[in-house]
Amino acid sequence: MIVARILKDKGRNVITATPDTPMAEVTRLLTDNRIGALAICDNDALIGIISERDIVTALSAHGAAIMQEPASRHMTKEVVTCTEQDTVHHLMEDMTTHRFRHIPVVENGKLTGIVSIGDVVKLRLALIEMEAESMRDYIKTG
Image (tube, rainbow, N blue to C red):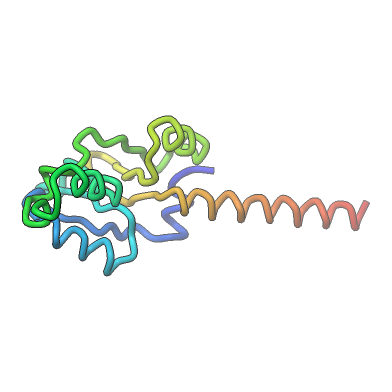
């Protein structure tokens, strides 16, 4: 199974912010959209990602004053990305190895989606259920 399948099911809409978006606005976007990470783009180019973990880390280190600072100051700049042709297994390995829960999908330098660990789990559960149903059908006819 490949990333394109996840995007087909969940859609390609990605909530983004610019590097100069204040952290207070970043937290509002995360809350209003019920998401755990935000892609930071400059002229449609992905330059970072900011997650709930990044915000908690910044708050812990610097206090509430960070809420007026730009997202670029607290975002993860070295973003691990994937393509639509990457396998879900590859995503699970990257998420486990690097200990993050969101991977932006980039095709030809353009951000085309974002995949969360929840998306991966949902797909895996659907596949397991399909396999179980196939086995039940096979047993019934065997």
